[in-house]
Each structure stands twice: as structure tokens, then as C-alpha cells.
Length: 159
Image 1: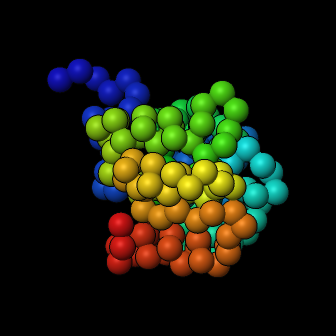
Image 2: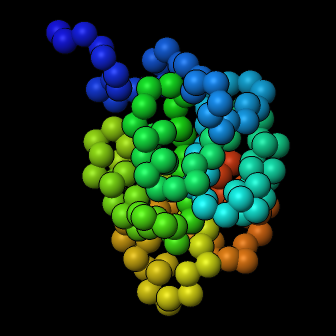
Image 3: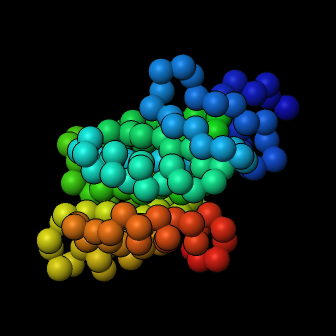
């Protein structure tokens, strides 16, 4: 068998868990190691979601300001990302493409995804539903409602 030189074939919750390197955008909660990744290029929007999520026991919040950065975080070994909360309108790679890439990756395809977006195209909810997202919240949204949905996903009461 080939030596482990990076990402495991598909890491599971039972694997050894390592925190991301110093300097990463991670806010550690208390309790079990589990994380949510917020993908948002607006600092204010990311901070609003982060504040809402930090009250969830045992949750760490990781922040990515772009879809490309999010994919790097998702594909590296370390703290398992249990869910992704993302915007759609971002520079270089939009949220639609990021979601497509997550769904095409054997190790990431079952990751629950929540979309929060200011996209006003009436086709957007259907497009993200076809990509298999767990929920869509148009901006302006209630951070409390997004948090409730995330808690349901993390508790396994909804996908």
C-alpha cells in the first residue's frame, strides 16, 4: 500500500483529526471536533454567519473568502468539514461551479451545502436544488434560520 502523502482516500470522523495550521481563519468552539466552512467574499456577511454559528456547541468555524480557497480547505487533511455555507456571487469562481466541483469529488460529494445569496434570478433556487444543496436562503436572510438549518444538518435530523 502506498504511504499516506496527503489526503486520505476519504477521511471519516474516526480518522485522526488535526487542526489547520496557525494563521488559518478558524474559530474553535467547545467540545467535539467538527467544523462548518463559510465561503463568503463579503467580510460583513461572513462575520454575521460566524457569530450565529459560534453558539453551536462543539463547532469550529472555518472561513474562506473565495471558492478556490474553499476547495483547498475541503481537500486537505485535518479538521473534518461537516457542512458548507456559501454565497454564489464570488470573483474568479462562482458558488455554482464550486458546488459542482464538490459534488463531483468522491470524498466531498455528500457534504451538506447551504446557500445564502443575493442572486435575484428566479431560476437560482431551482439551479442550486439540481446541484443537491440542502437549503437556499435569499439575502436578506435570518442568521437564526440559517443556524437552525445548520444545526438540523449537524444533528442528522435533515440533509
